Image (cartoon, rainbow, N blue to C red; front, side, top):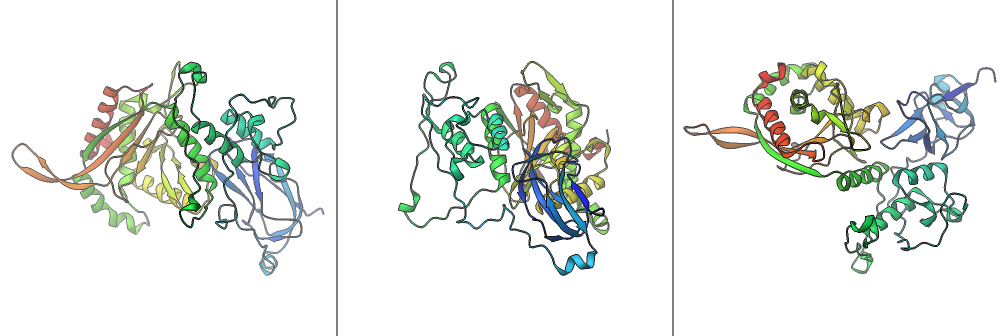
Length: 427
């Protein structure tokens, strides 16, 4: 017993009271160093607690739904030799993000009555939900007394809260809603698609569920304006290609995204309102003196926006190296809390997939995001003749409460000029 190891939650950044959503081991299981013991879920990412050594699990100190912070004891284990651990490997359960298609169906949308006769949650004792679900409901402003549970003994699950919100958003709003200023729209149709042919129900991944709610919130609560422009990157692309082979020898993929990040910082310094956040009361701006850029990464489980820090202090090769490392971590699901925190400005690049202009959704609490399409050769008039130039489509979405149209036009125009003349990157 004296040699037992007490496993605690590692450094998870600024997060506290993170719920445990899955435990992979049980007493008696043999694990190897770095095996995942359990999964935690913040409002932005999921993260695993790894085993610090090879050993046999003695006791589990937490359960699904418990909230933990850095240093919280989660289990005890008896260390064993690495070779012995490999003889009897633990049979890790299938991750919750890889479920059979028919195993789970979304909870049905249950529209709430316009005048509920159920008492509020406080003191009623009639709403059965775990502390983590209650916190989730509070974050969304949901009264749990109006939510029907689909879990065991009518316990309210996360899916029930999400379905309730979707149902509320789909309901027509009368004059009583928001003092008569609510939207009056017909509800979403409830259709039995199986009447028309075979269907398959595929549950959304956790990341898609979380990001979907945040994207919807950002879209309806932030007045978006999208400014479009094109940047002449003919010389920039020629320079990138000339350096790619040298970078490749160092194991670095030298992409256009690094140049976009560096150019964005130059523009943010020129227009500091774009590097800000609006205060909660909407009365002031918080201007940031650091430059952390978020990059939208398409992963098998959904869109994730890792943040690369201090872009203003890094060279293009270092940025390219960081991009490769963080993108790989995102794609294999190794998401750390620090990877998604502290962004100032985001870039969503679809150039590798195609398309031209689009409207990227602002990643609150940021106030702007840059969308990038696929570059193409176009004839550009130089005053005498048309010249073939490589043009990159840009789509800048910004929060109209903070930034007006003239500022948006100046920003994207300045950014285009910076990309057209890479000497501006060193100014």
